[in-house]
Length: 532
Image (tube, rainbow, N blue to C red; front, side, top):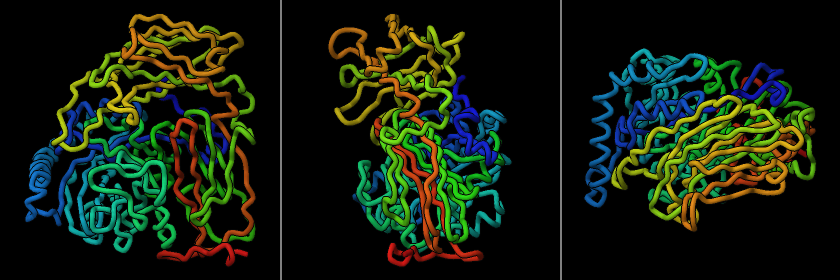
């Protein structure tokens, strides 16, 4: 029930290809270097809501501005953090091996290198055999060092790519797809799909530069996948809303996950465990296919809430938009009674927090799966504050229902959510009723009431902690499957999917690339006129 995988009936296209979605975060931080939150606890939190993780240590910054007194405080905590990681690195493998749970939770070692000139890179290692840190000042040097030490059992990917080149954003001129199968397009820093989007960078490092986006890299002809990760600095991998990734693999197996990463079979997520797959003649996101006279794009989408739209982005422009509200086509038309029950917890007076505990069950229905939407505190720099010290969240099956405990901080302002949540995928009988106990408050809600709209309440008077059961979406709102004729596919083309929920949660598949057989290096994208 807890984090149950999607059944075949909700991923029939993927199942026919022998694939399933798995969810992880391979770039996040803890007190292993200069982050907050205990490293062992970070792994426990990751296992609550992820299939795989890499907890990242800050390791190296070859062109750090050590001679600029205005940033001496930044240099200081980096130098100390790097030294802390180097001392802890050999022994941290014991903690990683202790957290590994084959078939349930996979753990990968990882660290990062900063670079003003080339952008920051996260390094992920495939194995838990105690391999050392490898440093280099350039992507080319890093590729050589990792290859010499690890062969094909290491990769490195640029993260927070949207910062300008020269200020720790991506440098497409030194990007190497053999080193980096994908780039981190979304994280707590924001979104770097295009120059203009609703999730711009707000960190003190600066805004997004248009030449440091996914769109620009594709326009230059580069081949790469995309992922989301949290880059969370407070020991909470998978922190909800800060970024996650999914990959398509044949089984819950670390080597299968590694192969999927190397093959770019990845999707960038903001938070919800969305399954989004693009397929052309058996090829899926991340694949390179040959030009062809005619093709059909298959789409399979199972979202974490009502879908606003699914966009097909072809050669950098919006080519087709799907609205399930206007064109319903559920993945599983045999289960119209299936819905998503989303409970959100938090609010209350600014600067306060509340320890929530509760149970949820159904009268007249079956809970099929439970998805945690837990998040950590909004702390990035070690200069910003201390670890919250909140207990590790807990969630477990309770008979036919679920019980949980999690601490939620009050929203710090009117635009930054710090609420906690969980989502139940459930089948409802006619007349079904939801029963919940939240911090001793008994709640009985007919499903028919939640179908009309969300229901909210407080634990006390105004400014007290509050809860919200979101509106129940019908199956036609959170699922969509279908095929779109593409016409001819010419060399140099790219296609990817972008899904947006009404909640604002999003997903982006890695592109499918069209290249002549045997082609290597960047390709030129054909214009609409050239395709005609």
